[in-house]
Length: 575
Figure 1 (cartoon, one colour):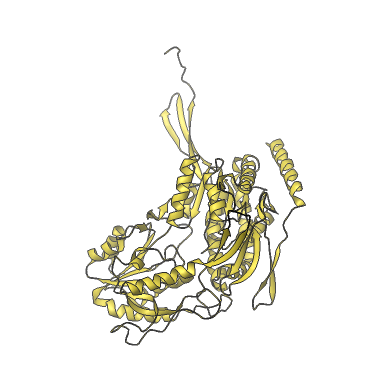
Figure 2 (cartoon, one colour; figure 1 turned 180 degrees about the vertical axis):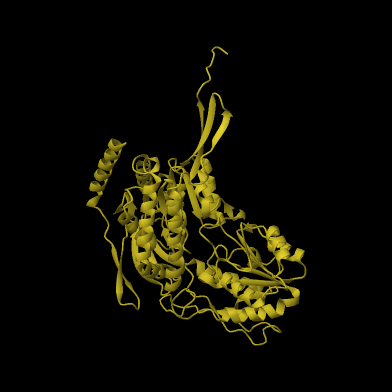
């Protein structure tokens, strides 16, 4: 084993030496209003080095959604001109590095104590760099610094430490079983082994948090990783890659390849040497990934997809608390959340009263620049880059599109045109930034519609409305009444999604009944949208398959092997 390790290190050293001359320089990024700069790596992170693309000179521009200004550009993994993304050479290189590490310096070659030590070291480094990481996250994603630092990064550190605790246990999921077959001559036992090279594709709404959710359980059981961050928010994933190297992980254990989804994501999903792919994002893309995985090597797949999550407010509920949780459910992260509580159904007897309380809660939301401590929410992320290509020539035009921003406002227009009552209006800023701001509602909002061009909170919605049926991924809330518990549950379950749901009641029996009836992977009772690293999270129906967090996430990165051992039977041949 020692000789094998030395051989591997010589190969890695040779690989690194070949790339030292072509390492990509870091960008120096100014932080607005703080009179400081941050150094950000801009290359592809393969074998613990930041390197250029093998076959492309394309870059991905990263924008600040609060100002619409360019932050910097990072290397794009493989060319957007390639027609077959599965042949992407950069993805090939990253997977080759991950496979080499899995077979030599990681996987079954490193014990749990060593894995635990390195994961804890990484958690310590992230914690000590929390402020800088939070500022970079705010710059590229728009969310408030205090939210990125205290919630996203704080939770990510805890997540890493939680899985570091699993890494050095006798078995990462359940105790290895010894199974009785025949006490005299045979026995069998099981092993839970790392599945191998894992492709991980993460979204732009929680760049650091989703990175930790994916990386931590995979590393804990001994898998190696090829990470594709969102093309909208790749900067913190690259910065975290620096910390992976500093923590002491062997080259190739974690690789980061920023690229467009149609290039890098598609290549990972279809690659024959990837053993498992984990994806968080839209249901549409999840279907494509599952199809590619099936058509290639039937790799294991876990998908955390979209949602249209309901909350039920019963007449016995603490209405003030229910309104606070409802406001959190739709306002937190500016509604850019797969479990955003975008549908609220309120029992008829308390409907008007609850709406009045809810309006006051939402009015307290402060949408602004993430570097302003007063801000509780930032702009929506809309920095998707479109490459316009003239097939008759090599001419390419880069165009920034406000995709998510325009999408949110499109749904707001739809709600009004379909007849939903506007309770809180919305207005577009005339200044730069992808902001979706609430306006003050009319004092008579319960008696007549608000005089506003658009709306962020709609009341008296119908199940057939577009804003009720489709995921918006923005701060747009639909509210409607119900009469009975049965009707409320029917309305809540009337969706193709099943990621999250909530209910508010002081009747314990009702809480038990309704939590059982709600068709969702996670149900919150008298709270909403709070997760714990030791509790599983995932969806039903078209919200995905598999589970993140808790011990259940470890199952996604392992395979079970049964070993049958003959200790006494003699086979007579021929039979």
